Length: 208
Image 1 (cartoon, helix red, strand yellow):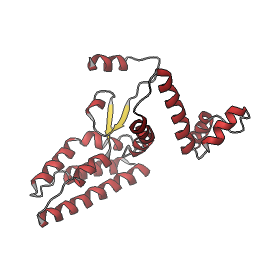
Image 2 (spheres, helix red, strand yellow):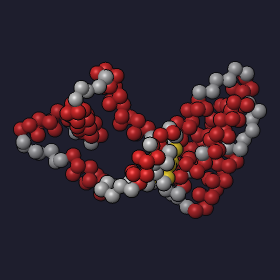
Image 3 (cartoon, rainbow, N blue to C red):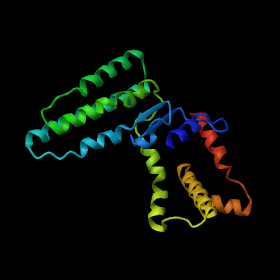
Image 4 (cartoon, rainbow, N blue to C red):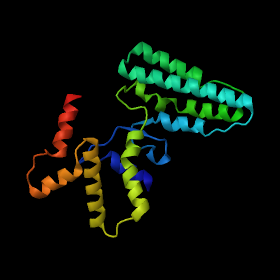
Protein backbone atom coordinates (compact mmCIF):
# COMPACT_ATOMS: atom_id res chain seq x y z
CA UNK A 1 0.00 0.00 0.00
CA UNK A 2 2.83 2.41 0.86
CA UNK A 3 4.43 1.73 -2.52
CA UNK A 4 1.22 2.70 -4.33
CA UNK A 5 0.96 5.89 -2.28
CA UNK A 6 4.56 6.88 -3.10
CA UNK A 7 4.07 6.11 -6.80
CA UNK A 8 0.91 8.22 -6.83
CA UNK A 9 2.77 11.07 -5.13
CA UNK A 10 5.52 11.03 -7.77
CA UNK A 11 2.90 11.28 -10.52
CA UNK A 12 1.27 14.35 -8.94
CA UNK A 13 0.72 17.23 -11.34
CA UNK A 14 -1.49 19.63 -9.39
CA UNK A 15 1.12 20.23 -6.65
CA UNK A 16 4.92 20.47 -6.79
CA UNK A 17 6.65 17.16 -6.09
CA UNK A 18 9.58 17.59 -3.72
CA UNK A 19 12.82 16.39 -5.33
CA UNK A 20 15.15 16.83 -2.35
CA UNK A 21 14.30 16.25 1.31
CA UNK A 22 16.32 16.73 4.49
CA UNK A 23 15.37 14.30 7.25
CA UNK A 24 16.55 12.57 10.40
CA UNK A 25 16.87 9.16 8.65
CA UNK A 26 13.46 7.92 9.81
CA UNK A 27 12.46 5.01 7.51
CA UNK A 28 9.16 6.59 6.44
CA UNK A 29 11.05 9.25 4.45
CA UNK A 30 12.89 6.78 2.24
CA UNK A 31 11.85 6.61 -1.44
CA UNK A 32 9.74 9.75 -1.16
CA UNK A 33 12.21 11.92 -3.06
CA UNK A 34 14.97 11.59 -5.63
CA UNK A 35 17.49 12.99 -3.16
CA UNK A 36 17.40 12.35 0.59
CA UNK A 37 19.82 14.42 2.66
CA UNK A 38 20.48 13.44 6.26
CA UNK A 39 20.80 15.66 9.29
CA UNK A 40 24.33 15.81 10.73
CA UNK A 41 23.07 16.80 14.17
CA UNK A 42 20.89 13.69 14.37
CA UNK A 43 23.79 11.51 13.27
CA UNK A 44 26.06 13.19 15.79
CA UNK A 45 23.63 12.41 18.61
CA UNK A 46 24.35 8.71 18.19
CA UNK A 47 27.93 9.37 19.27
CA UNK A 48 26.74 11.45 22.21
CA UNK A 49 24.63 8.53 23.43
CA UNK A 50 27.68 6.29 23.79
CA UNK A 51 28.66 5.99 27.45
CA UNK A 52 32.01 4.19 27.81
CA UNK A 53 33.38 3.38 31.24
CA UNK A 54 36.94 2.37 30.40
CA UNK A 55 39.11 5.55 30.48
CA UNK A 56 40.78 4.68 27.15
CA UNK A 57 37.40 4.40 25.44
CA UNK A 58 36.25 7.67 27.00
CA UNK A 59 39.31 9.43 25.62
CA UNK A 60 39.11 8.05 22.07
CA UNK A 61 35.38 8.82 21.91
CA UNK A 62 36.04 12.45 22.89
CA UNK A 63 38.84 12.68 20.34
CA UNK A 64 36.67 11.25 17.57
CA UNK A 65 33.78 13.54 18.40
CA UNK A 66 36.17 16.51 18.17
CA UNK A 67 37.23 15.34 14.71
CA UNK A 68 33.59 14.76 13.76
CA UNK A 69 32.52 18.32 14.52
CA UNK A 70 35.70 19.75 13.03
CA UNK A 71 34.73 18.07 9.77
CA UNK A 72 31.19 19.43 10.15
CA UNK A 73 32.60 22.96 10.40
CA UNK A 74 34.49 22.36 7.16
CA UNK A 75 31.18 21.52 5.48
CA UNK A 76 29.74 24.78 6.80
CA UNK A 77 32.68 26.64 5.26
CA UNK A 78 32.15 24.78 1.98
CA UNK A 79 28.55 26.02 1.83
CA UNK A 80 29.85 29.59 1.89
CA UNK A 81 32.44 29.06 -0.85
CA UNK A 82 31.88 25.79 -2.75
CA UNK A 83 34.39 24.59 -5.32
CA UNK A 84 35.06 21.36 -7.20
CA UNK A 85 38.49 20.99 -5.62
CA UNK A 86 37.11 21.41 -2.11
CA UNK A 87 34.28 19.00 -2.90
CA UNK A 88 36.76 16.28 -3.84
CA UNK A 89 38.89 17.02 -0.79
CA UNK A 90 35.94 16.82 1.63
CA UNK A 91 34.70 13.60 0.04
CA UNK A 92 38.12 11.99 0.48
CA UNK A 93 38.39 13.29 4.04
CA UNK A 94 34.99 11.75 4.84
CA UNK A 95 36.28 8.36 3.72
CA UNK A 96 39.37 8.71 5.87
CA UNK A 97 37.53 9.93 8.96
CA UNK A 98 34.82 7.29 8.85
CA UNK A 99 37.19 4.45 8.11
CA UNK A 100 38.79 4.96 11.51
CA UNK A 101 39.30 1.88 13.65
CA UNK A 102 39.67 2.81 17.30
CA UNK A 103 39.53 -0.56 19.03
CA UNK A 104 36.40 0.56 20.90
CA UNK A 105 33.94 -1.86 19.25
CA UNK A 106 30.75 0.12 19.84
CA UNK A 107 32.33 3.31 18.48
CA UNK A 108 33.77 1.50 15.47
CA UNK A 109 30.33 0.11 14.66
CA UNK A 110 28.82 3.58 14.92
CA UNK A 111 31.53 5.01 12.65
CA UNK A 112 30.85 2.36 10.00
CA UNK A 113 27.13 3.17 10.09
CA UNK A 114 27.88 6.82 9.42
CA UNK A 115 30.17 5.88 6.55
CA UNK A 116 27.37 3.84 4.97
CA UNK A 117 25.29 7.02 4.77
CA UNK A 118 27.92 9.02 2.91
CA UNK A 119 25.74 9.76 -0.11
CA UNK A 120 22.98 11.33 1.98
CA UNK A 121 25.24 13.09 4.49
CA UNK A 122 27.33 14.64 1.72
CA UNK A 123 24.49 15.66 -0.57
CA UNK A 124 25.41 19.20 0.48
CA UNK A 125 28.51 18.91 -1.72
CA UNK A 126 26.18 18.65 -4.71
CA UNK A 127 23.63 21.16 -3.39
CA UNK A 128 25.48 23.72 -1.19
CA UNK A 129 22.20 25.51 -0.48
CA UNK A 130 21.02 22.55 1.62
CA UNK A 131 21.11 22.94 5.42
CA UNK A 132 23.29 20.49 7.31
CA UNK A 133 20.61 19.86 9.94
CA UNK A 134 16.84 19.99 10.25
CA UNK A 135 16.63 21.60 13.68
CA UNK A 136 14.62 24.49 12.26
CA UNK A 137 11.90 22.07 11.13
CA UNK A 138 11.84 20.37 14.51
CA UNK A 139 11.58 23.68 16.32
CA UNK A 140 8.78 24.69 13.97
CA UNK A 141 6.77 21.61 14.95
CA UNK A 142 7.46 21.92 18.67
CA UNK A 143 4.41 24.09 19.46
CA UNK A 144 2.12 21.63 17.68
CA UNK A 145 3.59 18.76 19.69
CA UNK A 146 3.21 20.65 22.98
CA UNK A 147 -0.41 21.46 22.22
CA UNK A 148 -1.07 17.83 21.35
CA UNK A 149 0.46 16.75 24.67
CA UNK A 150 -1.85 19.11 26.55
CA UNK A 151 -5.13 18.76 24.64
CA UNK A 152 -4.55 15.42 22.85
CA UNK A 153 -6.50 16.11 19.64
CA UNK A 154 -9.45 17.89 18.12
CA UNK A 155 -12.88 16.27 17.89
CA UNK A 156 -13.98 17.30 14.40
CA UNK A 157 -12.18 18.14 11.10
CA UNK A 158 -13.20 21.80 11.39
CA UNK A 159 -11.44 22.00 14.75
CA UNK A 160 -8.28 20.51 13.24
CA UNK A 161 -8.31 23.08 10.43
CA UNK A 162 -8.89 25.96 12.86
CA UNK A 163 -6.12 24.74 15.16
CA UNK A 164 -3.62 24.34 12.32
CA UNK A 165 -4.54 27.71 10.79
CA UNK A 166 -4.16 29.75 13.97
CA UNK A 167 -1.01 27.94 15.08
CA UNK A 168 0.53 28.50 11.64
CA UNK A 169 -0.27 32.21 11.77
CA UNK A 170 1.12 32.58 15.30
CA UNK A 171 4.38 30.78 14.47
CA UNK A 172 4.79 32.69 11.18
CA UNK A 173 4.29 35.99 12.98
CA UNK A 174 6.91 34.95 15.52
CA UNK A 175 9.46 34.19 12.78
CA UNK A 176 8.71 37.52 11.09
CA UNK A 177 8.95 39.36 14.44
CA UNK A 178 5.35 40.55 14.16
CA UNK A 179 3.10 40.74 17.21
CA UNK A 180 0.44 38.13 16.46
CA UNK A 181 -2.13 39.87 18.68
CA UNK A 182 -1.70 43.07 16.67
CA UNK A 183 -2.00 41.05 13.47
CA UNK A 184 -5.27 39.39 14.52
CA UNK A 185 -6.67 42.68 15.85
CA UNK A 186 -5.94 44.39 12.54
CA UNK A 187 -7.71 41.64 10.63
CA UNK A 188 -10.73 41.90 12.91
CA UNK A 189 -10.83 45.68 12.54
CA UNK A 190 -10.00 45.41 8.80
CA UNK A 191 -7.40 48.15 9.06
CA UNK A 192 -4.76 46.04 7.26
CA UNK A 193 -1.79 48.25 8.10
CA UNK A 194 0.27 45.06 8.43
CA UNK A 195 0.68 43.50 4.94
CA UNK A 196 -0.34 39.88 4.33
CA UNK A 197 2.20 37.48 5.77
CA UNK A 198 2.70 35.81 2.37
CA UNK A 199 3.70 39.17 0.87
CA UNK A 200 6.19 39.83 3.66
CA UNK A 201 7.73 36.37 3.19
CA UNK A 202 8.02 36.91 -0.59
CA UNK A 203 9.70 40.29 -0.07
CA UNK A 204 12.22 38.80 2.35
CA UNK A 205 12.93 35.90 -0.01
CA UNK A 206 13.51 38.24 -2.94
CA UNK A 207 16.24 40.05 -1.00
CA UNK A 208 18.18 36.91 -0.14
